[in-house]
Amino acid sequence: TTLEGKPASSRILGDYKKVISKYRSVYYQYPGSAKSDDALIAVAELYQLMANDQKDPSYFEQAIKAYKFLIKEYPGSPYRAEALYAIGEIYLNDLRDPTDAQDIFKEFISKYPHSSKARKAKARLDDLRAEMKQTKKTPVKSASSSVNPVENTDLAARSSATPPPEKNLATNEAANKEIVSEEAAKEQDLVKPPSAQRANKENQPAGTKAAS
Image (cartoon, rainbow, N blue to C red; front, top):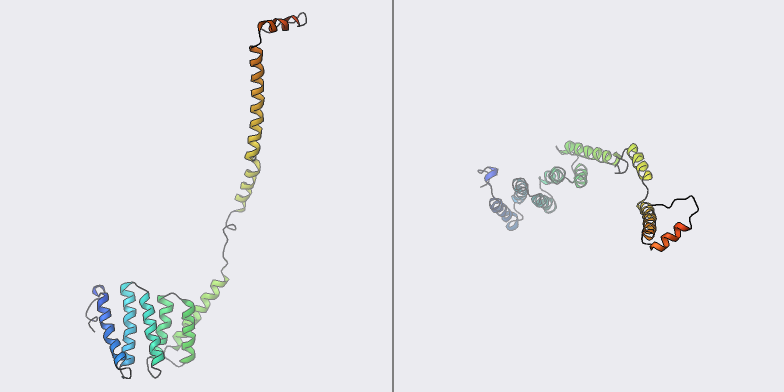
């Protein structure tokens, strides 16, 4: 193809689309051709290359669609087992979807137990099951459990030692009222007329000096 002579860094999206269009014309125009399944495999593999070169995972989905189309429309194709296994690898390694990957590898082992890739599919399945079991066993730590108990005790002690702000306000208001009352009494003594002050002095017991 025209892509084979180009390094991956110089390939553009248009180059891929031109080649894919040519391969598609084979199975669209000649669906009964012996080359139709070859063309479908080529399209699926090109979509995988596009996904890696263009850093676009949506092309992995397009590759899966092409593989599934081959499996469904060409039941006698020798590429069916290869296509199914490739779907499992895409789910596992490219799309990071262990659930779908597990389903595909199960299907592969069931349909193609004597395939050259059956052992590898079983190994993939065993690894996936082990990972899922490990994930279920791993406890999830809550935010509250990660706090040191000593820190909790210190916080409780500090909070109990500090009176509520409402009580502080009430105490301060009472103290302020007492101070204001005392100041008002002093001011009243200062503003009394001289006659009242003399009367107070005359009423004092003998031997007692009036305050200057």
